[in-house]
Length: 316
Ligand code: AKB
Image 1: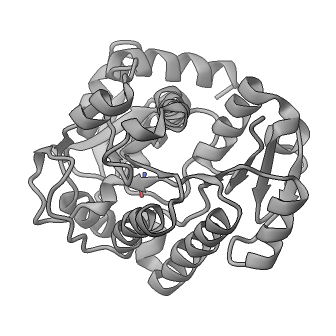
Image 2: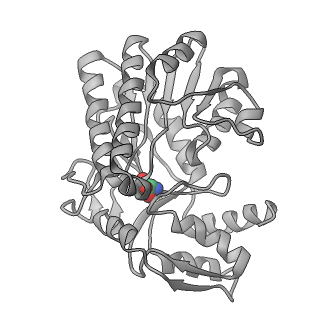
């Protein structure tokens, strides 16, 4: 029987992954944790929820033993733009939380997942068709923590036999929970503002291509990777995954197919633009497809149609 503990369960990925895992493995088998406990969240109301600061190793251990956890999904981390504003905090939280989680995965032989990111690449990485194995010299603190996380995942697998697995997520687009301080967040904000104001001022410049993926494909990727037979996985930490490479004007054009009056303008944020320019335009996902069957279902048009419908249903 699977008993899964999720850290950062209230975040953009966590809030949807928690629900999907509860549907798949049973509500009682998924323990959601985060640093705060809002009363109005589905993550809290539909199943077990515990407060956990991931830098508190003792509390993490208590929860893992109390609930007899066998799988740890470690999501708690600062995203790229926030990490750039608070680099020391980003190191302490992203690396401190990760090493605590990996140590417990070692002690209790837990299956382990934590996300990496396209932020693990840097300006020296090939920009187009970025290979699975390539140069990784990021110039952001977020990227430094993500590369370090990939290396730690490999280390715990090779040295201690911990079943570590990871993907390099692109920008994730979703309607359930807002992302918190990423460089790719424009691709979420644009849908909210299109419905609210029919206009959007993008903080990322025209012609800046980055990889993106719709949240249902991200959730499906995590579940597929976690269910793949261990001996099939060669590149464990971490697989390139993406469903589309897009610039702000591409999203605007997709929205205009449903809302012809929608207008895109630009108010570029130099910090986030610089981060975006240090990341790839489009990564190669062949290895994820061949090793564990990664198969995203949503392209830009299909995602746009669903985003607009779902946000309208939410009253946006
Ligand atoms: C961010 O922009 O920081 C994240 C990411 C690509 O890792 N969405």
